[in-house]
Figure 1: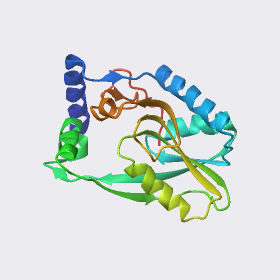
Figure 2: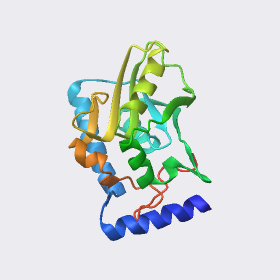
Figure 3: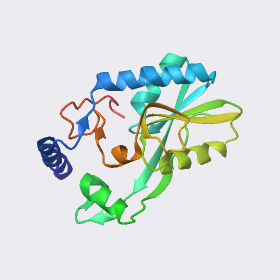
Length: 199
């Protein structure tokens, strides 16, 4: 309840100051078109698409459908420092300030893969990648399962991100790190849609 109120208040402020570009599902589908095109042009044919839960579920599901690949899920969590009754991650502006001041969240795999990926061509999919940390943790974990190959894909990233093999949209690093774009599954987005369903 408190978190929902906080997100609504942040959303009002962000919209008032025009600091964010709130993406729509139509925007995301456009990124997916470009992502699919790049993967096909590269000749990579993943057998399993791995969704990094929770925000990577929608793009992973769509890419798996388009490429006719199997799908698996895993969860990678950022353990945030407490801030009163919240965690610092709950307050987006405070989280970004903390990152600029040197705060580094602890990132761990908290839900293992639900399918065997050994000797398989794997594509890890998340919604975006800012610091490379989540993708690197996910990729290293999957590589320990001895797949044939592992590549990564996101909808949105910056032009200095070496952890991403395929991106639907690549922005200048400074633009992305100022949080100029927000996904439609961000709870304070005016375009909010529960695209991830009950999961």
